[in-house]
Length: 227
Image (cartoon, rainbow, N blue to C red; front, top):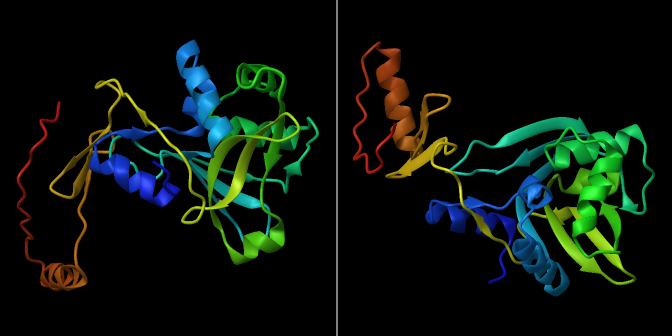
C-alpha cells in the first residue's frame, strides 16, 4: 500500500500499532529487516511517523517522532533545521539536526557510519525546504529513499498530506507501551491523562457546567486493561 503520512498515522492507530519512525530505522540491527527496508527505499518513499513543523519566519522547527500515535508517546525536539539541498558539510548544526532526527546522542561521524548499513556504498543526501517554501507550508513528513547517482536520501520536505509511499508497523514491548486507545479516547499511563475527542456542542456544555462549579461526569466503556 502507498499512503501519505496523515493516512498512515490513521491506519496504524486503527490497528493499535506503532508506526515506524526515523529513529526506528536508524536503530534497526536485524539484517533481514535492513534488506527489506533497502527494497522499500529502492521502490518508493518510506514514509515515517517523524514530522517536522517548520517556522515560517526563521530556521527554528519542531521534530516530532511517533506523531499523533495512540500507542506510544510522541517524542519532540525543538531545534534549528538548516536549508539542505542534497550535499552537506559535517558541522555542529548538521550534527544537532541529525541527532534530533534520529533521537540519538551519537556524533555525526558515528551517525554516518551507522547509516552505511543501508545501500552499502550509497552516499547520504539530506533535503529540507527553503525558507520561502517553509513560509508557504510548515508541516512536512520525513521519508527515506534511494535516488539516482548512488544516493541514499533522507527528506524532510514532503508536505504531509501529499507525499505517498510505503510504511511499516513496529512491535512495541507491552512494558514500553504508554498509550492505549479505547472508545475514541487515548489513555496515557505515563502522564496519567485521558484525551477525549468531543464535539463543539459538548465542549460548550461542559464549560457551562464548570462555570457553575458543577461536577462533570464522563462515562465510557474501557476495553483495555491498564496496568
